[in-house]
Image 1 (spheres, protein in one colour):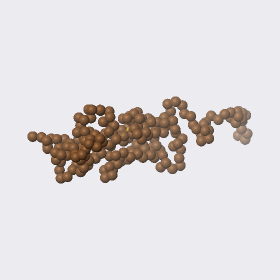
Image 2 (cartoon, rainbow, N blue to C red):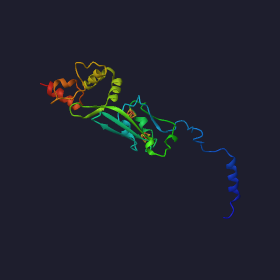
Image 3 (cartoon, protein in one colour):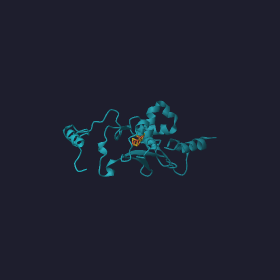
Image 4 (cartoon, rainbow, N blue to C red):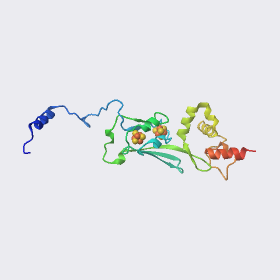
Length: 204
Ligand code: SF4
Ligand code: SF4
């Protein structure tokens, strides 16, 4: 058609003098509606590195890697893969480790690496077999939840001793030499090695 229809011209003129329907970002911040699920934000104090959110994330946006040598757990959150489903917030064991914010345009970047975040937590490794137990922060969080019941576990007791600086002369967190001995009951051991100490070295 050579000339546009009158209806289209009319609509074009109306749109020209109507307020914009879209938000004027970045000139003005976007105001999402209540309950909007935007970029997840981690609370460093309340994220204990337990790995639960990685297990429930459907798009594998959250991954973990454990360095036994350096005893560090690294949590990688790639928001370029995030679906904003809210599962990480829903299942966070502390209830405050990660929260979906009302921000979404922060993820509009030209380099995907800019939307990847990392957190590091102290890794607890068995001093006998090097099995990964969990993170130090995770265990202390569980102590807080359990209260005095935490003392029912020797591992917890040893960790609390260490935290309270009561370990001397019982040295905790030291490598097991040769093989498990009775004294290693006061060391940081995984449940399997602790059982071995208790059953084999304390048994009849
Ligand atoms: S504390 Fe919450 S945010 Fe942190 S790793 Fe565990 S589930 Fe994820
Ligand atoms: S909102 Fe969903 S997709 Fe995004 S990080 Fe959390 S669990 Fe994964």
